[in-house]
Length: 398
Ligand SMILES: [Zn+2]
Image 1: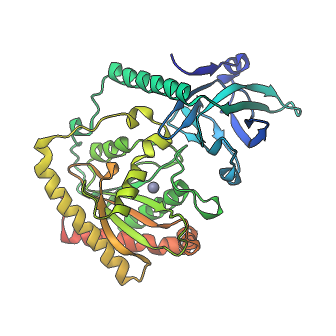
Image 2: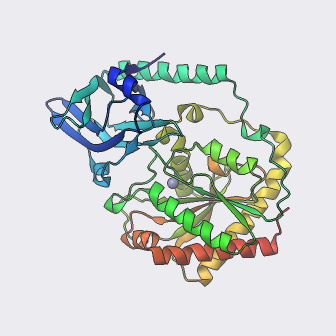
Image 3: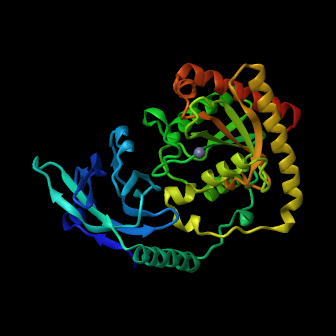
């Protein structure tokens, strides 16, 4: 066992008897040298914390709770804390991630009574830690997670998962809304989080494609939950998807005028430095969301799949160009350099043509407007759906 645990006796007694706890409020304040994070719960739960590095952060694990914290809390900062993120990590677990400006330790953590009597405040006192000690502890945590993974057996690699054979003749489009849960993705103007924008968008696209009756559509995530990148690929393969569309929305520092859609395909040799940086950022999803075992996993490559991969790469490129063509024809806003490649982990299914679509920039007020306005979302969704129809008309699913 690693990390430190707060096991509240009331939590034990009430856990089964009651509905899921709700986090109503969050507050980050500074007192002397300490940063104090206070989360107001409807009832106490057990919490478990440990440090991770690259980037430096504190992880707090808890049972599945319902976060109803206002979006404005995404702006909360302190001398020690860059950002506090939280969300569902799966069907049973939630996670709070405290992104740190420097090595920090939890001096004290526990539930304290709240004056109203109806709520329970989790008070977390943070203070600067000795960098060497922080690193040592984070290293030991990483090692234990690695050991646990080895013990549990690592037989769920992408390559070992054969697709299910189905009698269903209609092609299956797998739509992959990026990020989710404690992995917010980019946080743009007005505290808008990428994870919310892309989920709403994916649902619109699903509706547009399904309406044709010619295709089946599935989503890798239907709610605000974290799913590791490898798991997204596994879901697509296990369902025998014929096309994989990962949906994202980027943000760019100090360039509010940059806007428009960009289409990415997978290639270890990136077309340009910017694409390489983006892939690196997107590949950090596992780290940012907190599936540490995914983040620490080494890549496995299989030479036998090279042939399939070549065919898949050609088809991915065909879809990317079909999509771009449609967007141009329909007058959608497109980035200056609209088709690029880099090594995206989520695009690594060897046998499913895959693209990653960056819808636009959450740092651009006009992009935010077109991505969150239901009417323009419908319009963009229809144009992407039309590109899917055209692609399959020219390249029937095999
Ligand atoms: Zn993203």
